[in-house]
Image 1 (cartoon, rainbow, N blue to C red):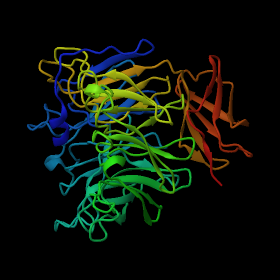
Image 2: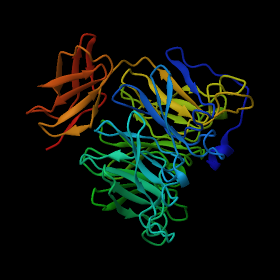
Image 3: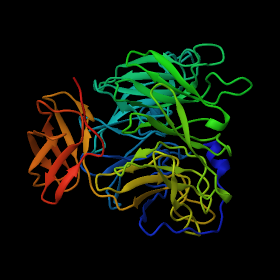
Length: 486
């Protein structure tokens, strides 16, 4: 947060989105409904979007409690839960990470502070707002926090086995962060403690994870690694198995980038794509591609244009759009130095789609989007800004926005993989009246639950590929392939 506060410089220039797209500010937080949304959004089974704010001035004197909220695709906001509702904030406070939609329809997340021991929590919350604290970090009470401390600002990930995997920024054997797994009922196991040797060759301060098609987990650390001779290590890319065996795949430094803070995303080519907040040719961050074996290719250097109009400091995770391109944000740069939304092809051709702080005074459209975007099943992208939205001189409590780039509706699966005979959920828009569902061409038995949800059984003979749903409005395809497990 200190880095973010030092980056923004308010300018009076204005920017206009490209004609083929439409940017809309849906919500401007005012403090009573939460403030400073650091994380992004996730779409629920009901079609609404869910997220967190890191503060809530009306509940906490310091404004650091935070909320969980729901927002409709058109912008109606409902506060579902305000943290620190329990004495001593045993329910947690400051949820900097976003939520993950679990296969049971509930959401799981973390708070960076609070809990029974003040070191953060893992929680479950229903779409209606009923919250259960599943785990409080650092129960040892001796300051060692061998189970981890202060969960990462990246969301949890639900694995094929139904358990959740995540990271803590501190704690563990060397107080440099951990990787953990936790069951839906709250049993936590620490899988790995970083900085396992002098110099932290395995990295330190891990970020979020993704489970790849091979079943292993891939992630980044913001610091550490094995540097090149005469250079300073600035973070790593690693692979870790479900049982906790870790392999460092790459160490960042200098021209290749530094301090990756967002989670990775796997492309249809099987490679991983991500961003660094610094490094590169101009030290303002990069977009990179890395193979599962650790071969890294730098795709783009930010601040390559005069005045950094292409943006700088990408903090958030990329999202793989249904058009095959990647979409992301930067917290600074752009025509008004308030950050940007960008599109980048898998080969590295970048287009700046929107520059924040284009509505003056007060940056009514927000500034400093600290996290990535989510593409909803209506085809539009949604995100948050950490600051701006109202007032003068760049003041404000953050926003929720929508960006339409002309992409059509599609369907998502929950989970993204399954075995033959398993019942999965298919989420979408206007699914009422669906007449058929197929898995990579193989017809499947299904049931329409609502306009936003279908349940379907993975059919015998199904192979990995896209899911097709035929509706009265036309055929809808999954944004990515559904993985049929053995």
